[in-house]
Image 1 (cartoon, rainbow, N blue to C red):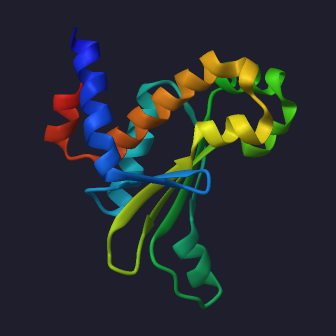
Image 2 (image 1 turned 180 degrees about the horizontal axis):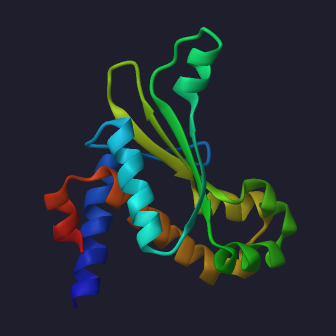
Amino acid sequence: MLKKTIFILSVLIIPSLAISADGLITIKSNHSVMKTTQMLIKALNKKGMTVFKTINHKKGAKKVGKRLRPTTVVIFGNPNIGTPLMKCSQTIAIDLPQKALIWKDKKGQVWFSYNDPSYLVKRHNLKECKPVIAKITKALANFSKAATMKKKNKEKIK
């Protein structure tokens, strides 16, 4: 019953906080870019995911004398999940490992973006991998919630 309630709450709450376009899911964060990044990495580590790299594009721009609003990419994955996807279609390797983009817009709002798994299904013809895609969809939604939501909201959804 609790899982059913959680699912219903996430269906009702998340659409108001997220947008999906061009194969991306973008969710409003309640934290700074740095805090959102830290919370994401903590959630990934807690679930045994490998964090391969964190790229701070703002720092990179500064090194060449350019200015850029805070923009960070976290690259992460797990071969137990990625390998079955590549067995369905090796071309998905171009989109693996997973990436999360955490960025601040012109108005100062922080956002969390990642590849929409349903877009990847279409892009790489992964129809035979629907159970794995369902697992990834759920995991990415949970990681995004852990990184972007205020603590009170996260506790209610659990």
